[in-house]
Length: 244
Image 1 (cartoon, rainbow, N blue to C red):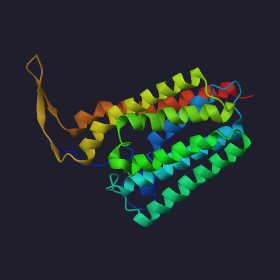
Image 2 (image 1 turned 180 degrees about the vertical axis):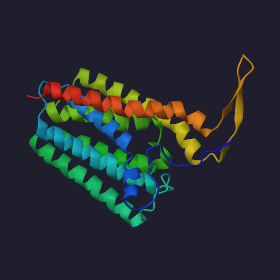
Image 3 (image 1 turned 135 degrees about the horizontal axis):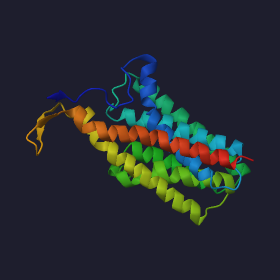
Image 4 (image 1 turned 30 degrees about the horizontal axis):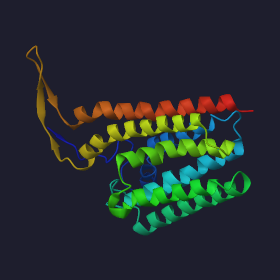
């Protein structure tokens, strides 16, 4: 027997003050999605650190701040005490900052970056506010928006073009995002919606083991922790290898 209604996420802190903002950032997942930007950028022959930094900052503002603030406005899944007004300010400021960085890049690198800005801005709003009857709020769109799109954008910001290699890497990052989603969905349900878990496993040797919420979520959450460490490290290594 176990109460599954503990913290809303394994990285969530107790509610209140600065701890709410840490929880709102979804640090492991934000870091994972930023690593996709870096992996895409590392496909360039040489990584331009200015545009690499601006691209990372734009995605941090759009995903780490704006998308997560909009998500929290929809039913308070993280149970933070941040006011609705503050969440709207975070969302608008974050998305506006990302768009401003994109406009700067579109004037200096390629006007086609404006298309990336438009797509990214649309996805942040449509996915998190579940617009169009939730048509864009699905696992597939999550994988493309938070996995494939950052990788492709990271590459385009370095090279002003799209290559077959970048598309393939983008698809790989989308699949990693799908893996994240597959692992996180059942543990989110356990933490946020399930009140009680009870049961036993009967082994072939006749012994029994108790099942509770900790048992059910231990393996997927450990996998998510390792995933959120492995890919940022991979991204750092790839970018360092491309420094001029």
